[in-house]
Image (cartoon, rainbow, N blue to C red; front, side):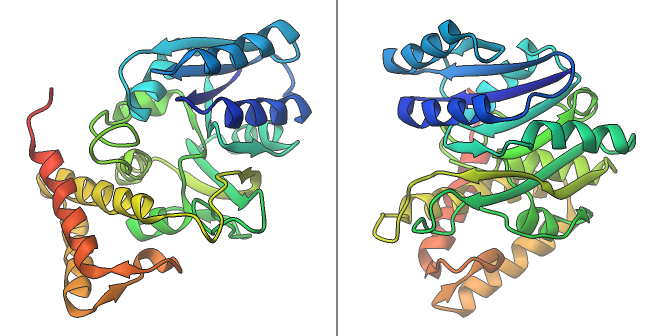
Length: 291
């Protein structure tokens, strides 16, 4: 059984478009469910969920997670969902017609596959190239650099036993926390480090309708990416991870040597001093006692 988990927080218009895309998608054979986790949201979000529930066009269920944070919402969805395959997308994404069937086919055809992440293209050609992965070749992931280059949290699926093996999403990381990101990077890295087969699969395809055009402010997004990365580095450095030590060292040295840096081959550049500051802020967030 497939469970699709969509976490949402105060974005009713985006959520409505996302759910409409599921109405147009090909349903997988057998039972499946679409689980919407409403995370600390207002009444308009619930109105959208209830409207789709009344339409009965989707096997829609929903639950609430009162504490803000994408990781908390995803973990709540995992505990409530019934499927052996758990797929995740975001409320600002539009799934392709074959998205769900492609996920099922990939896991059915490869018993050793435990995690996959798929292709993400912009929904609007005028949108900035943020939050996309457009590679056309398949790849088995074996390194941190490949994780950063290929994998993304808005299009990913897991066999349930992965969470029993390596644990759930880290609630100190991700949107809705002071770090702002990196919960997906962290769980991918923990899995790859544990030898869990993880693949990038371009046939599992969706579009990201984030709506950030070339005139949109993106500084806050870049800040969150850097803070999340700093927290991620700190977490694994404290565990004595030498591979992450090398990655962190090379990034920091590169920042110190240049006035601008383009981490992980993105075209969006901003000042190296600001990146360093946000890396440090993220590390400090990780060092703070858990509340």
